[in-house]
Amino acid sequence: MINQAMLALGQEPSSIRELFAYGLARKAEIGEDKVFDFSIGNPSVPSPAKVGETLTSVAASPAQGVHGYSPAAGLESVRSAIAASLNRRFGTNYTARNLYMTCGAAGALAIAIKALSEPDDEIIVNTPFFPEYRVWIEASGDTLVPVPMRTSDFQLDIDALRAAINKHTKAVIINSPNNPVGVVYSEQTLQALAQLLTESAEQYGHPIFIIADEPYREIVYADVTVPWVPSFYKDTIVCYSWSKSLSLPGERIGYALVPDQVSNFDQLYAALCGAGRALGFVCAPVIFQHVAAACVDEPADVAAYARNREALTAIMDECGYEYIQPQGAFYLWVRALEPDARAFAETAKRHELLLVPSDSFGVEGWVRLGYCVAESVIRNAAPAFKALKQDYE
Image 1 (cartoon, rainbow, N blue to C red):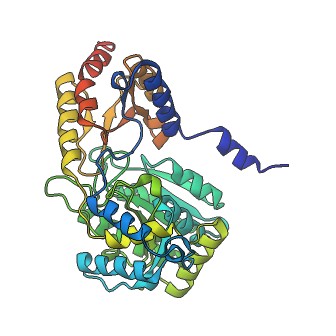
Image 2 (cartoon, one colour):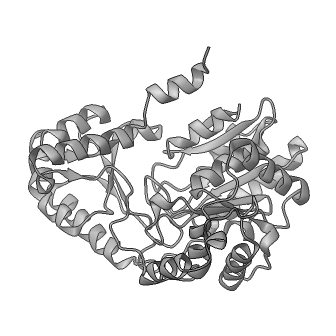
């Protein structure tokens, strides 16, 4: 009568969003200042002024140009502006034909996975991983293959990847800066991955793609830089969103990039367009296509997240928690104080701390703290973190 797989997805909501909804209800019940919600990646930094200025300008334009359909892949002028920005930053030579505008990075990932999918395909993800990868992979009829990252530094484990790759492997999804850990994959890591995939593609007689999920590209700290993955490996599809860099998560605007150098470019790009059509992701929001083009070189306000990172890690240090120092994004990966991360997160709720258990990300024993919140939330949460630590002493 109905699709049972879709029914199961609908009845099992995202644990992150479920915790976020709990937080909203709890704030309404006891007061917003009494709940310390580290659950979801909603940027707390305001959008750049140019975003508002562009919206005002676009809204004053003729309605047909503002609210009418764009081509399925997006306005050519917008795609050209994005390509030009990438060329300035990375020394590339992209044009509009390399880009497909999407409803955020989620749309880009879903389309990229669908475009590549054939019967019996496997797609490797590195654990811990963003939970929705499983949804998009399995919805395309593929098999998700989890491969743990190195526990010493959470860089990719090349030996573990080598053991997981086989004739069915179609792609490896990498996410750098990483959600949930905050690690940035180094040039050395990417070179090793590129060599492995090149050798594996030759061995099995077909391309193995990298799908690079990069919505946090601009949010990095100190002197950390994020390597441009297509410069290391030709068969790379880049999925991007302005949700984090311009603080526009609810506007759902992003792109998928297919470089000319990928195997069978014409067919792959056509398949990307076909996947967008099949999934209903055609004509990304036109107003925000214009915003993206106008604001494509606007810098992200990383300073506020850097302050939050310092404030939160200082609390962790003072209380004696173990964590991974984030190089990018705005999440802190903290060791739970008991093996069962879900139980630890429930204990944290007693102190009004909302922490996402690592089970959601495919591993055990950790929690994720999103520090894209007001700095006051972090500072006011210090006694709660101290009390939570005391519960386990």
